[in-house]
Image 1 (cartoon, rainbow over the protein chains, first blue to last red):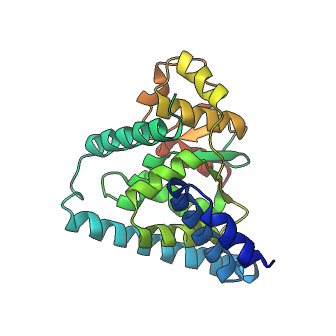
Image 2: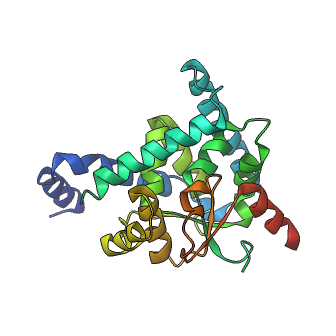
Length: 95
Length: 144
């Protein structure tokens, strides 16, 4: 049996609720395998990082702006993050 | 103890404020810009929180970003340990904060960088310190 076949077989027997986690991990591995970043020079890596950080920030800000959330105060953002934290923890660690 | 030579955790709010990159809160973005000088672990709880705040394209970019420093930025897929969570719950932490504290304990992390010190300031028995982004930057600058 190949790895692909084994993976397909195992995935079909997973509870559907776990599939998003599997997808996240596969996406992470896909990006990890995408380019040989190990061979980049430190300087080039730093330049790329700054560009990518700026691009991600701009994309995020643009979406927040479209959704009317860019002007939220720090307190509002922190309150929302707090709520998200509790919801996720309640879901992950129901006691 | 210094963030120049230890593994630290950046709380979700550091990533989110950093990506928001607001002019009146420059420290979080500056800290993210300094990632090449830090050693950062991202616990599963924080990963899930980031995933809730970023859309799928933004998450792909996030993965790409941290992949540029694979030896400096680590993502953990392990859940926090229930025994440890319960311990921090008994100390007064909310469930989510207890999960973060439990992650830090398991990972042997001594420093959490967070803009929300309310989470922990009522609790004196935490085995790690909490720095704001501005303080983390100052500590980073001390060696440069």
